[in-house]
Image (cartoon, rainbow, N blue to C red):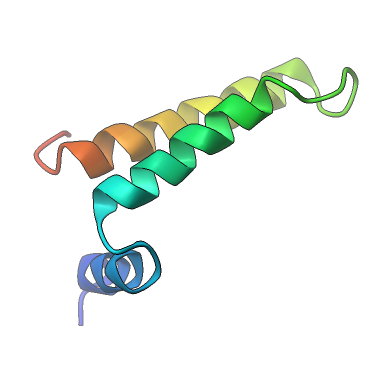
Length: 65
């Protein structure tokens, strides 16, 4: 089984669909805005947000590259 198949199976088992996981990840992005100051370095938070946004975009548009 390919890694992509394992990922898709996991998403479907845990969230039902890629769109539902995308909604959860969007919520995670919102939560990052409410972090207390000095919890993380600003650059670290920006890197996490960029990575999560890329996942969300990829899940919503499987042809995205």
